Structures are given as structure tokens and as C-alpha cells.
Length: 135
Image 1 (cartoon, rainbow, N blue to C red):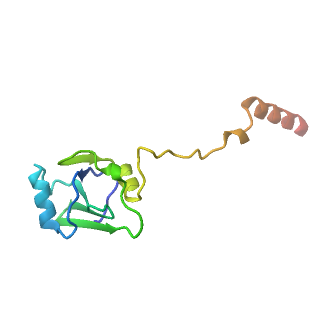
Image 2 (image 1 turned 60 degrees about the vertical axis):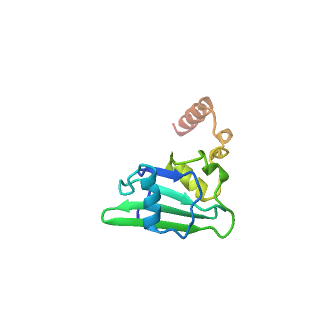
Image 3 (image 1 turned 180 degrees about the horizontal axis):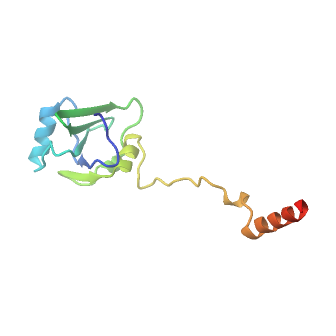
């Protein structure tokens, strides 16, 4: 119930969509591209100014629509990869797009500073000296 994660398959629509469209119109758009809207895939739609996004998803007994309106910023323009139809999107790409980050330019920051660690030989030498002091 109301769960989206990396196990889902995501397909993004390549063309902007009128955000006034509801479940029936969005599912009709999916069908017109030879997909089944009730196949469990999450379909991603966005508007022309890319400040709103809708996710259409079939869960056990019906459709669920997630709708996000961004107060500041917009979706990355790189979400548009083709001229027509849908294309598959990974979970991490979707999250970055929603946050307004271009995944092609995103790099993880180094989280560890390896220079603070002693080399293995120094650790062994320190342990040996400590062992001699105890005995």
C-alpha cells in the first residue's frame, strides 16, 4: 500500500502532459503507447514547465496517483530523452530528477578521508610496542 521503491519498474513519458488529466486520461495515454496501465509499472508524467510530476501506479485493487508540485525549481530537463513514447527510468534517477538534479552530472562525494588512517605497517608496529609495554 502506497509503496514505491527500487523494485518497481518506472517508465517516463517523453512528452509533457496536461496535469489536469486524471487517472482515466493518463491510463488512456499509456494504452495508446501499447502498454498496459495495470501491469504494476509506475508511469511518470510531467507538465511543460516541469514543476509538477504525476506517478500513475496500479496496486492490488486500483490505481494510485502520486502528484508533486514543486514550489521552487523544476525537474531536470534531461528527463526528456526521446521525442515520443515512454522510456525506462531507474529508481535513483527518478529520485534525483524529482529533486531537480541531473543524474548524468551527479557524483557521490568521498565520505571517508583515508589519510587519517595509519598504514598497516604502522598499526602492526604500534600494536607490537604496546604488547611489549604490557609484558
